[in-house]
Image 1 (cartoon, rainbow, N blue to C red):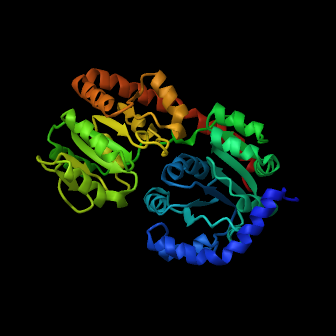
Image 2: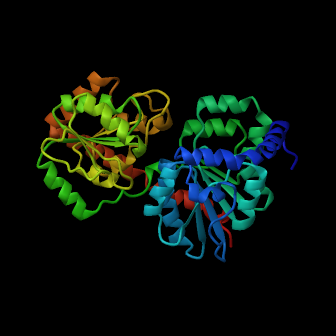
Image 3: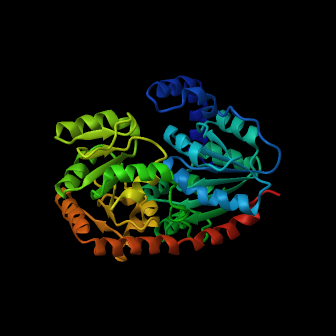
Length: 419
């Protein structure tokens, strides 16, 4: 296939830049943005031997997207136990979480940088029969090289924002070539489906992977130990917070008279968060430092990975981060919904707008425009547990209704699976 000019120029530019890649990756590793021990994977050099047998490669960029693949991975293993499953992700945090959550036998690698040589090395080693990419992962060299090598391709839970669609519309031949490389495109919502179809995709049924799966696990003994330390206090979980949200949410919850468990999206921010909260008069205990949650603790900083299931189960109310400051786009609330928790979100949730719109319409969540509104909502839900319980039940019902979408997706994917 002759690449459209913008894609050809992109390929040439990435060839020229590739000699700089190793140095740039080492600099990122110094800043904690890469795993220094696994930089070879980012250059397409596998750190694992490829097992024999047909292989399916699944890719998602970060923590939320990676975890959303778990129900699909489990379903593929149940349906085709002969398949080798390879999962790639980009961020170090996603790799740490997947190390705890991936089933035995599923291989994890970091996704290679999108240069022709790195993509070629990666695909030559792993030889996937099917590549399943999640959400908005449109890397030209990886996609077109996989297509050229004979892999089938699926874009699942596909997301296309209006601004992204407008940008791609300025290079119509390029986006058409990329999207038509996919044998199957399953959009996560009707708006994304319409945009993808306009750009040239062959669009199938809706599938939002983030609405599937089980609630995150929790260690029963640790859960009971924390419950004893909470000792009946009202508790609000601030989940996946970002800079500009930690103090805002903590102040609102403390004003409502509740204990705050604050689980930042990026735990490495914990020292600066603790300092900010302490300066505001909060009594902070850090979980990663082994500091116990005590009767005097007003904010318990849950700066560890893989333990969100503990704090979701303990919470009377869940405040979802990412929506109280601009630019983040909100985070998926469905893990909290699966546990029947009342959920509060901010207004800046463009990455999860369709989910929140549906949940708000069903009184399965509530939206707070500012700190004052957040304080009112938290105080109201804590003061009226019957209302909080009904909201949690609506959230659970919403999460459970979407489980059938996975079976529809498997029917679409099955003809693409390698023999």
